[in-house]
Image (cartoon, rainbow, N blue to C red; front, side, top):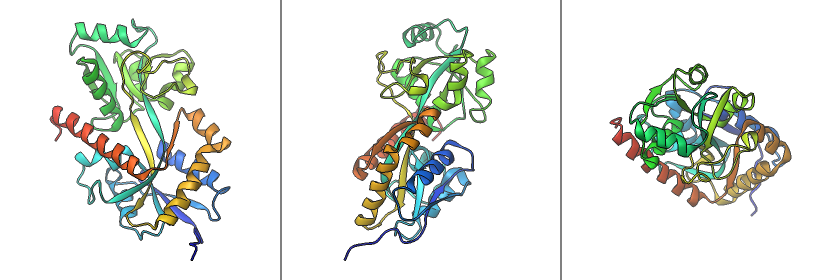
Length: 298
């Protein structure tokens, strides 16, 4: 017989407090999904334990498609090296990827470099002297910065801050030479001429900062930032999983969702292939593990 789904509201758990990127995106999905599902999606914030509280709540929920996680590559992969999570990489099923929040290499507006090549040449001549502000020690965006250094063959002096908020005034005030930030955190200052951006770590240019070249365009095949997945407990019936995927694909193609996310500088990358999503997360888990080991963090 044909499965009828959903017959009641779906809970989408965000493992962080209200107001962050995951929360904003989840609420945009919930709003637009009303056009494509017979029942509403209710967004619930379950912060705590470096995202393990909310993540574990979904992973251990009944696998009926009514409890889902808006999960990022941080808590689903790289973060597992740093926190004692009660689950592992095989404990959940990423139904589909929604998109990614890309990182940029930002500089003071008076910085002496106008592109990545000039910056790398400068840093190579002064190993360990150039300071880079990062929003924490082990988060995804900081790992992107370390990965950039590895691939560019440079050694920067990392200055960790408590989140991205304090990084921006430090950069604008010249207290750090460069910074790694998510696109929406610095696009306003960039567009107002208060900061420069040497590169965006994405597959293609981002609309909200469309004159900034990608690192790939400048000869460095580096893409990075948090990727987001609609994630379920293992064992959701395939017909139900496919109904959710189909709805999410329509959400990502909806003009309203596209408009909301492009204003944020978010990159929509829908991928409904669970195996490809798993492979992506395992690959990121491995890369992160290598970097953490080099840093002596694990």
